[in-house]
Image 1 (cartoon, helix red, strand yellow):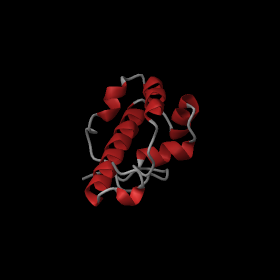
Image 2 (spheres, rainbow, N blue to C red):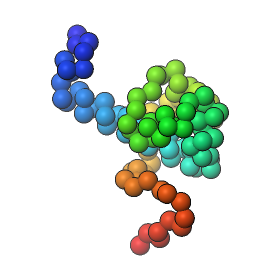
Image 3 (cartoon, rainbow, N blue to C red):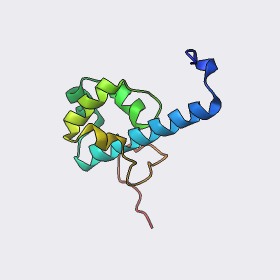
Length: 103
């Protein structure tokens, strides 16, 4: 059983990265549906805003206990966070102002 990062296969590392992106996109989707800001989710879940940003963009892993904190704030079952997002995550961060209209 590998215990050091260099002992994991590239395939396993890619699978984990895909899962982080999927869970993060789902959390972002649920947060936006409820009209919550990243700051609100962070404050109510006990995580930092930077951690929420990292989770939503699939850059940071989260302890599974913290998934319950996030799910409680979003008022969903933890299993909801593990479902694939209904839409693909946008690749560009939203920086305020009017969003461009899709055609």
